[in-house]
Image (cartoon, rainbow, N blue to C red):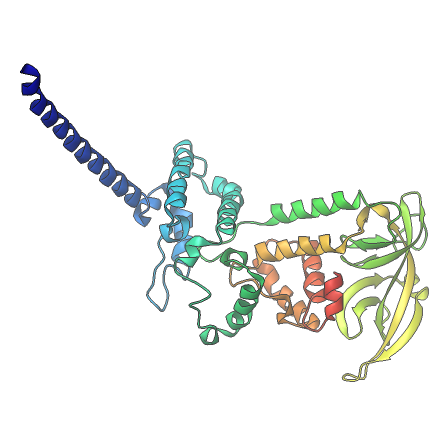
Amino acid sequence: MNQSKRSPKRRLTWLWLLLIGIVIGAALLAGGATVMHKTSDTAFCVSCHSMERPLAEYQGSVHFQNTKGIRAECADCHVPHQPIDYLTTKVMALKDVWGEMTGKIDTPEKYDAHKLEMAQSVWETMKKNDSATCRSCHSYEAMDVLAQRPEAQHEHPVAIKNGETCIDCHKGVAHILPDMSELSAAGANELSAAAAKVPANASTLWSISTQPFWLSADSKQHNAGNLMPGTEVSVVKRENNMILAEVDGWQQDGVNEVFYAAAGKRILSVLLGEEARAQVKHVSDFTDPETKLVWHKSALQVWLPAGQLIDNQKKIWDYAATMMSTNCTGCHGLTSLDRFNANQWIGVIKGMAPRTSLDQEQLRVLTRYVQQHASDMPAASKEAN
């Protein structure tokens, strides 16, 4: 009897507990959603002193002010919309709170020191998720390519065909690119390490940088000229750590100071000193039907140190492609290599050089790379490289 009297009360207690649990759960859910939303708000993102630089860069970009009157807020670019990715990003953002508390980037000097690291982290994430935040507003399918600027009309179909994602070409869309010199230097070091491992029986080699050459195996004498980065040589013989190699190229009639990689193309391969010019052998002649200029196919045997040559030219081009991708996307998307012919690329690189952190040697490698893959270079040559 007492048991039957207690049962309704017990059920009522459980109902109240359930109701209270639902209310508390709803409150926690609403509170959590509110916190998530507020901590994604641009005002919150830029409230820290360390965000003054990123804010200024963002305010100077097309994503802040444009003719369409459309503004992308911080979360639009940095917080994915997919639930799992969204939660993961919010949890990982706790490291930024810790960084703010410990003053990781609280001075301009500290910010500059960590800017490349921060940028690379964002680029890597966007590469892995196929630029998901970009695609929440932009998509290839929605583009009216014919209504875009000429550069975009040319580049977007190439990107679609190659399966490229937004961040491949648009690394500097909202923030000024960091100093890439450290990244470029690392690439050069990798080339040097690869050159040190070239097998002794390799018969075709390429110079990894501007490389002095000699006319004898005695490298203590003054060099007789220089090979430009990416120049191919054929091994004749080896003597200790020196290689006797043959290099060929094209010389314009009356201009004997240089070898070019192709007739009619100003792609520098070899710079020749006076003594070297006297030993050049002419192999054949060619008259350009358009300019009527006479070109001589020429060859020269030179001595080179083995440690500055590599047996895989593609590694040089990969290094150059990385430099181009990381340095040439601050003002525009990545330009396809066949956008210009070999001679036009010279002026393009010279014009863009002051806006990059590349030194003269890196610019030589980049210039040779874009020229070798220019619109007027043979397709077979591009495939071979």
